[in-house]
Image (cartoon, rainbow, N blue to C red; front, side):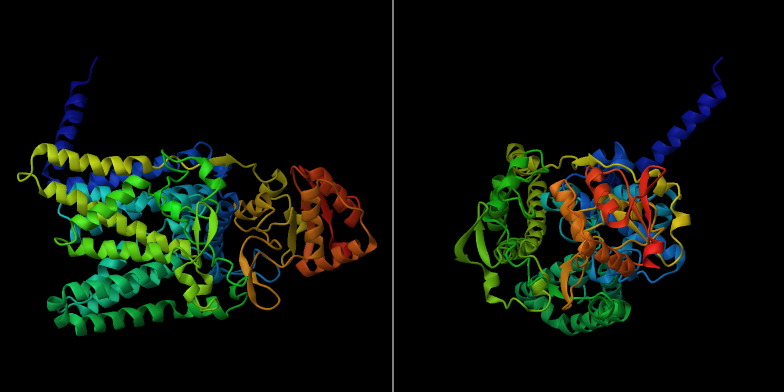
Length: 598
């Protein structure tokens, strides 16, 4: 028998919800729909991870993916044990890692520590990655709809592009710090509002708080935003001098407040980055200087878009894919900049900004179709050892160009929307279609992912604990590095730093204090990596055994653990030659080296 009272109650609830939705103003409903669409798109982009979230990593940058899982575990570990989050002794034992001098993402890993405790760093990583993409689109939508365009449709399209542009999706392959751009639109808006009469103190404080927090998310994107603002603000003043000249003193006071507050909040961590333990100077003689954007990249489709192909990585995609807009969108952006030049100051500024940073992104030597040409790029004018510049990758300046294109697209859509009632319907349809057709080829695909085996049961069950007393190190084989040992780095991440490990995946100082990728190799590490590369163990000498004991003492090791690995047979032969016969414990080979190292 049907319960009519229950049906009536359900119907009444639905009616109340329907009325509540209708009472929302149309702009508010548009805002909610836009945010919902961005969230769905974020889920779609990360769909391949959710197929098996505990055993999937980026197939494009698997080691970067594992590094950021390790960082989420670091935030959880630091908070649980109330340890300094700026440094970790759980990787690269005994020297540790300066997290401020690496892409630590502390502004995210610390607040999300409860999520990591509950579900592990794999789940936190996947949730955050999709959420960061959606959040960047949402704040971009807010910036555009509240300060630049009147059409919610224009703001939605622009926000979607700014959050999910090809260059951003490329970095979503293992580098969530480069998709964590949700504060940048807020910073840009606040910078442009610093001159508001009567609000210099409030605006300065808000800017200082935003900048300080962004430092703990991604300093490089903050630097790019600062460089962009250093162009936008003078252009804005020049184009609106009659209005802005009366506000300059207010602007400067607010800027001073923001700068002082940011320095107060982030000054010590920045000092620690450059002067704390395991800090470094430069990076391998400016290794990134020739990584300029390929001229063909601007008009090519990225691998991760529906019009792209993996073939591009054989030529021009071997470094990074930061612009990759395709001919239609590049042509549309240029056309919009020309058509809106006289009527829109914002379009004028966006056009100049995009062109300027596109030129700057070419680096020291112009590259075309994957080949360096004889033509010098703008970076040849800069000294190679110029502070900050020596650490920058020129191609990433083109991300500012991408942002400028997003603004132009939103302005173009807004112009079409404003023409309602003035232009024939077919003209408006043609305008919308031109923008849509330019954007359609760069709609993102789900990020490629690959299976990765879980850590050995010996590790996940805690069976290792009797072998690793406090203050000692577990040496996993392969020893983690920037090239080898993806699986063993995850042993540390997925146990949430239960034990310290030697070496690892990070940037630290060499013997001269210059930045290098990973720990300086020790003789035993090189023997292990060489065995993996050759697929066979070398003849072990007494000198090899002596060096192995010396290395184990340096690492303060208590146990060496070899799990399942494609090179496990050869590595087992090597370790047996160095350390004697091991013992099979659970699903690993184990060498208790405490009698050897003391």
